[in-house]
Length: 128
Image (cartoon, rainbow, N blue to C red):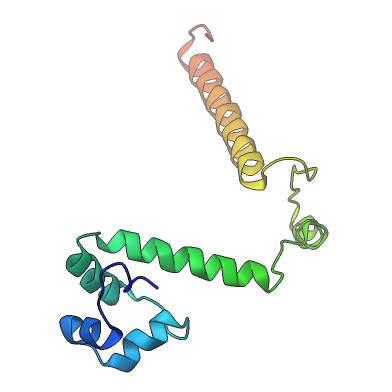
């Protein structure tokens, strides 16, 4: 519990932050999230910064969600994208986001080359 190293009780922490003791107790027991407002208060009190507390909350939320078995079903993703003419260049061995960004970059560069070619032809210059 984060209050132990500081030798501060939940009640003392609640008083210091001007929050109800139940609020702190619920955070400690995972029944209430650390909100941005609470993160600012905790960050100021412990001189750790609000982002530290928000990151802890995000990691806690991700861990809880993973424990519930949330996973991306790639077969369903492909099936949902197929009717609108999109494909997912992912074979299960790489990172989906990286694969998608690589595809976006390739599409952007292809479009850029096409635009440069059209411009060069229009002005009668060489295509570099």
